[in-house]
Image (tube, rainbow, N blue to C red; front, side, top):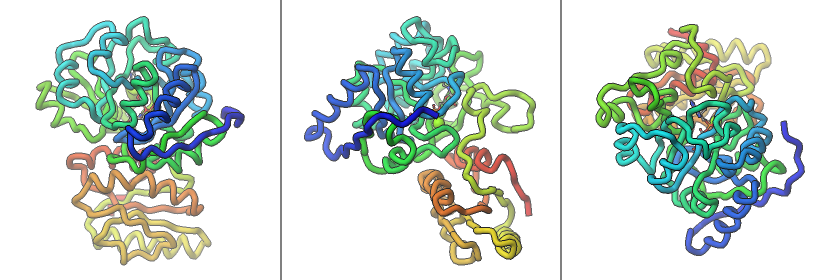
Length: 354
Ligand code: TXA
Ligand code: MG
């Protein structure tokens, strides 16, 4: 992990106009090769100049992230896509028109302008135009191309609040722009536009159905659907153990009463062993669990709310040193697919069907 040496300035952006001087200052830091964390609609990003190989190296150091795991390049104008790619298929033009700015990342052939340090050695580049005023203003002030992974240290849940960025990045980066809580709470959908059939490499707010309405046929990377498929995932980052809480997490699936009963039975046993326990549940069941820490992720039929709460909950369990965690399984409709993808990864795919 990179050593702590930089003084990290935390700046709250309330109104873009009033705080424009801060955005300019942040843009200058990026143009000079420094790092600035900033809000997007999905999660906070850790930004560096995407066209500067040294900046990308610094990002890997600050995150403690393996440098073969490529970064997403963030742009603030659709037309800038042409600078960093060597070919834009028609489908990508349509997706950009429909979903940008927004929580969609496209993998496209890289142009020579993008250093290999940014793409983890790949000949493709992942690009997105975020739907957040602070992010767009910062990217513009930085010169137009900002490489930004999620602003967490490697292995921790992506930050949904600036205070989590501060916890992970204090002393490692020059500035954090606090734009308040993010709207979505899970990382963008990644779609590979270089394969014959466009393929989802990471599920997110933009679902397969939404992409199919624009593109016709779309596939989902098979490695995501069954982790034991024996195939490596095509988004290098999806292979790492990610989003994992320090406590041992089990996802419990089944009919509601059976799930509550099964979990409570386990909780009694683990508490008898002296373990500190936690549960992730929903509004309907929040008063029924015996755990030391019960976290309500929201209403069961509101996957968007659950998505917004999930990473905060996982971080809180770490802060509270919870050792054993049980989570109810969630519906996989709409955004639920992304929620379950992250939850199952956090659990190391440990599921109990009761
Ligand atoms: O919502 C988001 O996408 C956030 C915000 C900050 O924009 N960013 C984010 O970045 O989640 P990161 O670095 O945490 O995740 C990027 C993912 C990784 O799994 C990486 O392997 C994959 O994108 N990726 C990047 N470039 C790729 C490429 N050329 N081909 C395949 N996968 C790629
Ligand atoms: Mg990440």
